[in-house]
Length: 174
Figure (tube, rainbow, N blue to C red):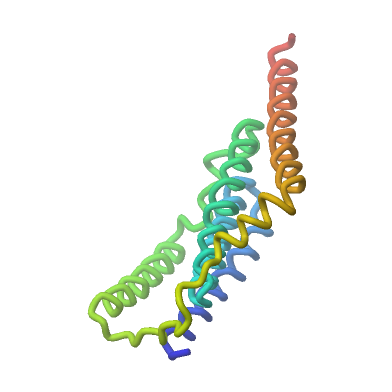
């Protein structure tokens, strides 16, 4: 693995660990959810760098996408987060850190577009079929577990709606 990929892998690892720590230490559930999404994106980038593009895409679609949308929907529905608690990095140091990270990412993109970064050696095997075997196992052998998970998530959402409606009725005085 070249130095460029090793540095980026280490960088995404540090970002993932820091985001996970910030996720655990936030008081606002909305801010915590956003830090968790950041950790999930960092993990997806690490999977892509390990030549597991499908796992990286699933990481983004399933965890950072669908589950976090459901989580934020429930948080907003239960009115647990407030807008004034979202500003984790509103100060001068937070802006400087964001600017520094933006400059580093822009420099990497510029280096990639100019072709100065050596490519990873291509696979000598023919195109690997990853999705078909995974889908075969998921939708045949593991179909019951897949459907039970779907029902469990649906039940959690319905439960959150019921709790939120009950809390709203108690506030109104019905």
